[in-house]
Length: 408
Image (cartoon, rainbow, N blue to C red; front, side, top):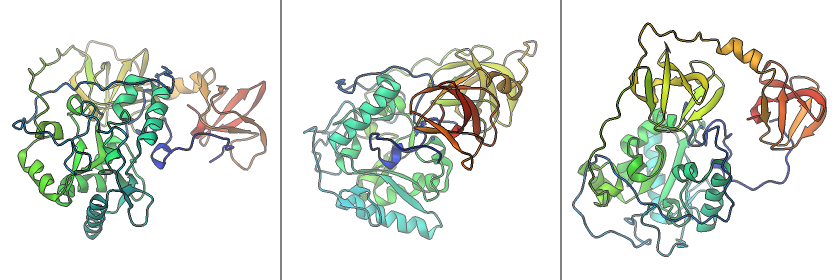
């Protein structure tokens, strides 16, 4: 890393993923847990957020039963509509062996058993995040709110007092090699596939599945698992319910929304989707298109990727996260894929913001002399073409090279 460290809020490992690539988490694939590139709303850290009601779509409905609300029990239901009581509940937790991730003892023991079973199948599971206190959750939620605005923050982070992590029964997992950490593509990794299929045998269930965002209130999180105990987890699995809300009968039935009318030459996103400069995850992210937005198709398709136009920008997105795809008529003239050529010209006049205190060097590499350090959050002018992961930039009347890793 080529940056100079200054005083900054201490974040958990889950937050150390570069914002443009995950959180972006996203949280991190063509999807970002984390953030639309155009988000600019800045809400004060002291903002008070009220619990939000949950809407529902077609889902298995289980007969209504007495809701488990005791935070000391492993069957407790916690979501935006049903906060913890008391909200600042703090369970007794233990550290998972070999990590600093903490869970309630029963959940930690079950997790260790699951890790051993996965290892026998050649799958190596890594514990990413477990118990979070009310205070820690408030810090995270306010951080996301300041960066992305309240609306988007509420899809990727829980309001303090409504997080399953505060119960000590929820864990975020990942691959040992950190591939697709806290990203939607985690679902297609060895650990993601194994856990989705086998976690219930050890008492864990996938809490925020794909296609159930309107019920859970959160974006698809294939890495987030909730401990219910083996008996309840197997009952949940056998019930056919897709969410814990449905299992407990609080995803009240509503009429299924009428299908969105398909317009020629358009498609709709099914997740927060990265638009890239070319067809493939190796290309630069231009912006992130929010879930449920309509995009215009240009007519170009390559290796499962579609060229689209959204918010006055044209780029490529993965067809995996598009629905209602209707290609434009053949008579429509699709713009030429000039992303690589145009990028070279555009870069001469583009600006970027530093995401850390960033060293400007005399050449493109850490072996070159440092000319000055650009403070975090400052705008720089990109004066030329990217070379070996470095951009030529101008700042404060001086020109030099900086690492593209710390530019947004």
